[in-house]
Length: 100
Image (cartoon, rainbow, N blue to C red; front, side, top):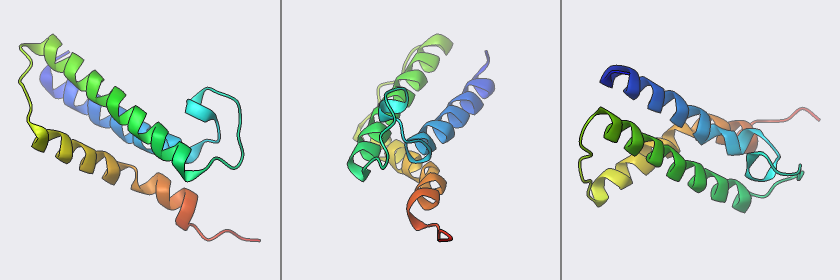
């Protein structure tokens, strides 16, 4: 896999992973159904998936060549991007007007 394909793969995986906690009612995505799942669980899952996406990115970077050491700024920007990617799922879960 070349560098361009790796970038697209990580962006696609990040977009899906960022929205997944807001679109399902299972604990840790594969556990038992818990309806309604609280915001605390969703944020915990979101942080866990953020860590897994970071690990996937590090693995892809190491596969392409030598991994570059990152400072705290990189992780803050990555978390901000992950939060931006999670916005559609958050809107769907909490801000959408439901018809009663």
